Image (cartoon, rainbow, N blue to C red; front, side, top):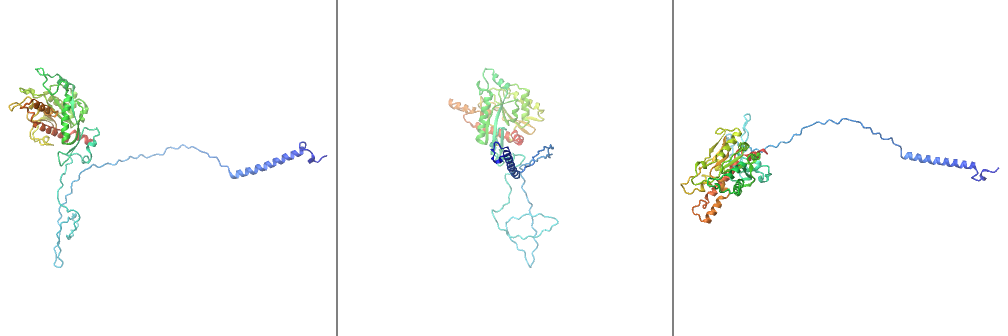
Length: 449
């Protein structure tokens, strides 16, 4: 029998088994050592378990935020201290009390009945700065009669955001220092315009020659307002512009602070137009109504006025429950009324276009030498005129003067031109009074902000 190591490996089963067993043992030893190092280097961690728990939302307490209130600007009255009489003890023979004369101001002390007044020697004080002089404050304003002080510190034209039609501030020390902005408008109505187009006198020609066939009532009134606006811009610091006409029954009429209304023919109006005009006049608006129909040399009292205009004003007040002679009335404006002195001093009424056209000579009859006021309670809310001042504002006087100089008409009343300047002064007064009067629509719109 051969020894096992001399038998070839492929035929030696015993040797193959020993080698396989030895290899398996070596592999097990190597795997065990490597696994132990890995476990020691990277220990296993317990898995993370996430649990979702449904909890009610937290209760939040509702607190109301308090807004800071801005205190309005209020002028505080100047403090007037009562004069204080110093009590000086009688001097003694051992130590007489020295007396010094000085002009230094003394601070007032409050007198209390339970506290005696100690004598204080009148030592001279060194004067520092300019000397103080007693006097009264000049230019003190009444807060109830003027616009708020905050508006005076602002640039009023910069406040023209398109929301309001007017904002005017008056300097209390000078009535002619006005600043602000203003938008003028007139009113229109289909019935009024149709009546003017159909109005022809008995001779077959139009009685109102300034409104030609190619010029509507709105065009002529807009030219009147432009002429008045130019004078206001030249004589005040108010920016004035003219906007389109507003319908007589349009609610936007309540935003217009000054309205021009002219008539030269009888017309009819609706109940809605009268009601809207009544709300306008009783809410702070101002109306300048004028008869502009030209007069003939042989005119009668029936041609002097147009009753339809007064009927419209009466119906407007009736629609809001106002009774004539009780709540409102037509009254003659005396020359002492503030309207004639709010900007210029108008001591006498100038002649209107109706007095200067077709009426020459001293013997010719003239229109009434006064203006009528539409007064509600004690407030003047409108002016009613029969003299034809609005025609001056449209520039007719300048056209008539040029025509008279071209044709060399010596006796033309328009060649002098003295009345034209006075009429413009009166127009400026009417607009300024309409804006600055107490309770005007312009001031109400400003106070609403």
